[in-house]
Length: 125
Ligand code: FES
Image (cartoon, rainbow, N blue to C red; front, side, top):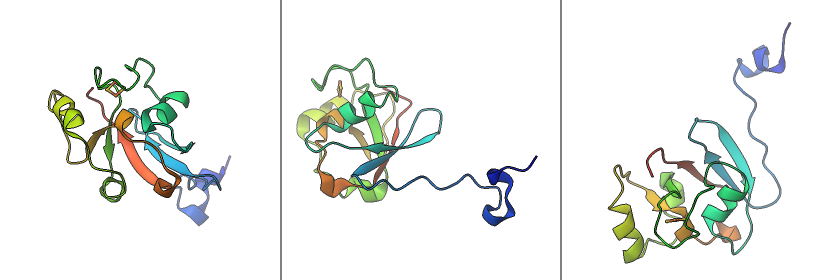
């Protein structure tokens, strides 16, 4: 049986992710699966990811105590969000593994100008 994924038209590649009209974030979960999440103005990035059930269920609520919300922004995304404050940098320094664009997503307040931001959930928290 032939499926759309087997179609020579797309070379067997998975179909592209939908581009919703609403502001969105692209998130790669800890299993490598990509998700497009609708974002809500004024919410913390962590809250948006948590409420979509992508593995941030046991967070400290943004108190900089757990680092469960550790994400890695892609290079373009890192330029589109405000830089980390000193207290976020101090918490990041406690993590076993840091990446060039590691951030704690509870410290990033979503604004619709960030639509299209791409990130992945860090394995290490
Ligand atoms: S939610 Fe705990 S440090 Fe971000």
